Image (cartoon, rainbow, N blue to C red):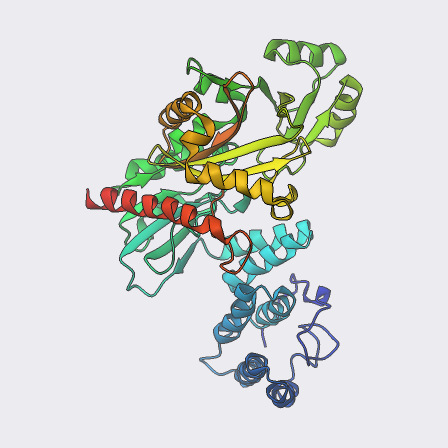
Length: 459
């Protein structure tokens, strides 16, 4: 039985229902007879999937114990992935760890285990498994081969910088070839499966920046249509957004500076802020972060000076603008651009300056959902001709095949852009949930993306 001395399977404390109280690498979990004994109680309890999982585990362990030439952990990995896709991460973790005990070179097990660990805040473990996954394998194929389109998806192993593409590239129509190019050698570009077009999913310009040379070499060799070229993504770093939209009527962007290290002195900090036209309060955030991770409002210099030593990498300092509406609420609109055409995605209304849909209690306040519905139904009527003209101009200047903006509307009728880039999330809601009414608007985005892919593939 293959063991991996570098693998910390002993950390698993959460076996699936009916398993031993140990972990995925202990003697009970490695005993085929134990799994056979557990299968029948699972079936009696109505857990057919659990029963099958234990029987597959028993069969797999038998094959490895007998050193069978066809011994493989692939079926057991499929079991783990089934639980992972269902959201049963505790059980999935158990089975993935057993897979890696048998075969430490199953990349998808490392990849999904990294996602599970990251979701519960075990960041360093997640990073180790993610690193291990991409050292083993750079190309991950999803599909049967019967889909109408084969799409190569350029990815960075650090998934926070990738465009959330699941809704845009559904498995029902797209044969997805995910390529972790940041780990791939140049010669691997020529060894990829055939594909019809490329979608550059490395949407965070900060993550893409160190890969600029590698991406340029890929582009120079690529004979297929490429959506979201890296050069277009590179123009969306936060500190150059104001320059990108300079001269557009009715468009404002708060001043922002990028720093690769804390200023050496108070005088240097003051000079940096002054050069950027930034006064307090200041929004401070690490680069390549999303969803408000690490975002801090520094009301004064003392608060900023306390924050700076906590940063080990590149960060941004942005002038804070109090954008509360007359009713005391902050509003953040999101519009998605597909082939430079604007589509409304959501409106979040919050009493807090850091506005996120999930923390704005939208579902608990019908008036918020009604206002959002008016925006989704007819953004031109909700925002006005002046604002929509500015939005259309932003989409053209952004010049991405897929991207978006988060923004608010100032009392004077101008658009204040919070961020504009390719990493904007668009996803379907649960059909039975209170937000299911948003799905037709998401479908419009997906349909527009499909039409764009068809046009590019045809060329």
